Amino acid sequence: MISVLCVDDDSMYLSLEKRCLEEPGALTVTTAFSAPEALRAMETSRFDAVIADYQMPGMDGIELLKAVRAVNPGLPFILFTGKGREDFAMDACEIGADYLVKKMQGFYTSV
Image (tube, rainbow, N blue to C red):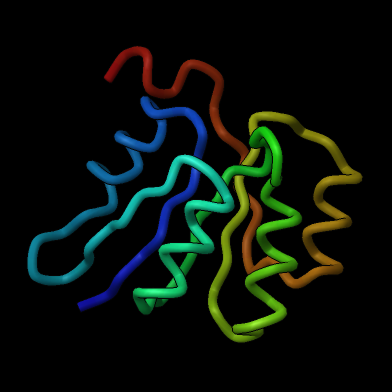
């Protein structure tokens, strides 16, 4: 069973991620509404990958990526954003994000 941690402060997007990714018997998704909540979840559970939004209040996705890399440098980490900023991509690559994904505007409004 593959276990993925999805982190996003947007509850609608987080719900969509869980619904799209979760596959009974094969892949389970745990959700967190903030980076600190995600770090707490990682203290008590093992995950095979993390998918996190870049722009979150308080601790953003880059800061979460740094914290995860400090304790688990090999854990696959995907960052996504609704902003097409090059500085974000450079920071994410330098810190070790495995993939960068751009959110589509209005992606979940028609679902």
